[in-house]
Length: 149
Picture 1 (tube, helix red, strand yellow):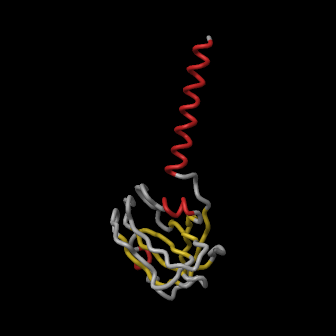
Picture 2 (cartoon, one colour; picture 1 turned 180 degrees about the vertical axis):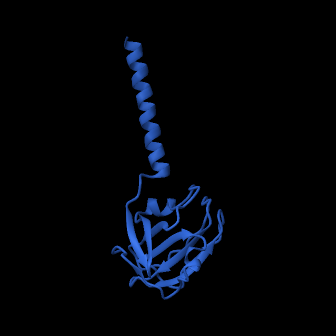
Picture 3 (tube, one colour; picture 1 turned 90 degrees about the horizontal axis):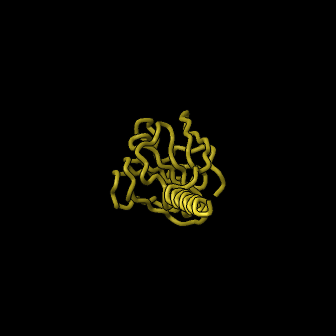
């Protein structure tokens, strides 16, 4: 009986450890927000911590249409992005504090090339590659519904 209790306790400890590792690697679900650009409605996961920003959309196999990831930075720096371990091609809009799109970059899956804004950006929005182009959205378009950095 005692041996069974010890075995069950060890198994439970291993399962808890694996759960913690999985949560660390893949992250708990991020909060989401609804954004609007012209008439386009976007559901975006919000990456506002260094850990969630570093993970980004890595290891995802797909990104549903009109969904993306909004990166929110609490500093006045230019934030560059790459696609290491990101398996889906993406487009990124770099956004200033007023919500205006500064520039957009189309990014290849698994690329380690850097994609940078033309100036400091408190926000960046990743969507499927071609999403902005198909909708004729570009520099000067405004994103509504952004949270405060």
